[in-house]
Image (tube, rainbow over all chains, first blue to last red; front, side, top):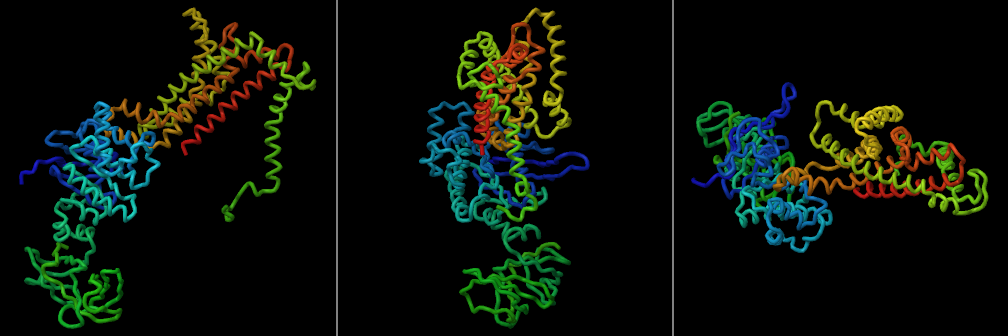
Amino acid sequence: MNTPIAVDARNIGKIYATGKDAVTALGDVSISIEKGEFFTLLGPSGCGKTTLLRCIAGFETPTSGSIHLSGRDITYIPPNQRPVNTVFQSYALFPHLSVAQNVGFGLKMLGKPAGDVAKAVARVLALVKLEDFADRLPQQLSGGQQQRVALARALAPEPEVLLLDEPLSALDLKLRKEMQSELKRLQTETGITFVFVTHDQEEALTMSNRIGVMSQGELLQVGTPHDIYEHPVNRFVADFIGETNFLEGVVEGHQVRIGTGDALDVVLDGQVGAVTLAIRPEQVSLTTAGAGIAAQIAETTYLGTDTHYDLKLGDGSHIIARVQSKSAGTFNVGDTVSIAIDAKAVQVLKS
Amino acid sequence: MNKKRAFDVTTLPGFTFIAILSFVLLYAPIATLVIYSFNGGNSVNQWGGFSLQWYVVAFNNQAVQDATVRSLIIALWASVISTTVAMMAALGTTRRGRFKGQTAIYMIINQPLMVPEIVTAVALLIFFSSVKIATGYTGLGYLILAHSAFCVPFAYLPIKARLEGMDTSMETAAADLYATPWQTFRYVTLPLLLPGVIAGAMLAFIISLDNVIITEFVKSAGQDTLPTYMLGQLRRALTPEVNAISTALLALTVLILIAFVFLTKKRE
């Protein structure tokens, strides 16, 4: 593990206003983003992810802590002197400039000769497949095209780090999916470090090398999408990433006894006493009544490839199962079934 | 059309009548003035046939020519100076976030709109006469300065409105793309602000062109502007020449106002 670090944020705190009105946007966040990485800051709105991004861009100055870019302390350097560019949520394209002028803006401000700027603009526009739109004004383009211009504009100066602030949130689902793979492609092709902010966990899982999950100004967990999904550190992360069932229980030997009186096999890692079990719906398998936890089907939702079953357990709690529609037989509301859960699929969290 | 709207003034009885009456009362005197500018006779209220003679008279009148040139010079300078000052004031008040004493600053900038003009006129008369004695300068500079001062709020308001409607994200994006604060202003803020600046300058130009009270107090001998010249004429014989000059002035103002409306509307 000797990958050079692109962005190193150390103990970043950001408090807005003072005295009684003080709002803590960032508690004490430390994060190291590797060079060439696609790093996603994931969290609900107001969790501080955008504030952290704005601190890296230089639009905000942290109240405490420091930010280093490739080893250089940039905490108090103004944004125009940071080799960092941003794709804004609103795109913030200059309405009075053509697409080509927008894309070339950064290089022009850096004082690059007009010929070099033109060459770079042509290259970047080709990269985002907008060669034919160079002379248009931004408002003559569709939302998806504007998005690409914003991307091209931020990529043109070849920044060390590209910051993306929920850039896909204004696009419709189909376009969003396209742009997700497009972004991933651009990141691989350019090798630029991407720091991507989103509240969309699916987006984060599909695109990132690593994800940092944030909540209420704190960084809860950093890891690969696989780590975060399979081994969430706490209930918040488990709940935020994908759908999760939570069952309360008490450790008894190698098992956890839940409210229904049933004991579940789990893989324990030293936990004792009251715990919360996190179980992904796709890990819950159903069989016609037999061994396992008895449950009654309260509701079924057909979702195409999958069917969701809302199961009512003996103690009145509910658990969701997601089963491939074509597998096995289907169950109907009112049926009594038996639930089986693989011990390795159960995450044991501290209550 | 939303029929459920609780109150709509246009549905009240007599609305049309009152509206038309108001417009008639507003514009009838002006219409009369315009009509009599084409009077063939020597009276401002007795019709003597259609003629353009008073326009010819006004056009060939050396005093009118001089006053017109003077008015235009003053209005041009005043609009340039006041718009520049107003733009800086607008940038200062809208681009720094909220600050202490903001309301007080707004009041000070818009002070010429609230202080009675006659008070400003007397104050300037006294102030400039001391300056004249001290410096010996008696040119148009005093009038230009005085006009610039009271034109500031008129130029300020459209520029401020434009700035407030402008997203600061443009400036943030420029800074992100390596633009220094000056480059940000030059390449992003100013071009986007331009319609507001031009609108402000036009408004200032009209306000300056039209001013009587302050000009009357501040001007030296032989520095009549078009409005003060006309005022002077009223004390002597009143001929339709005044109507002709007024109509020409009105036409110019209307033209500028139309351009103003066009410019401020275009941004939507």
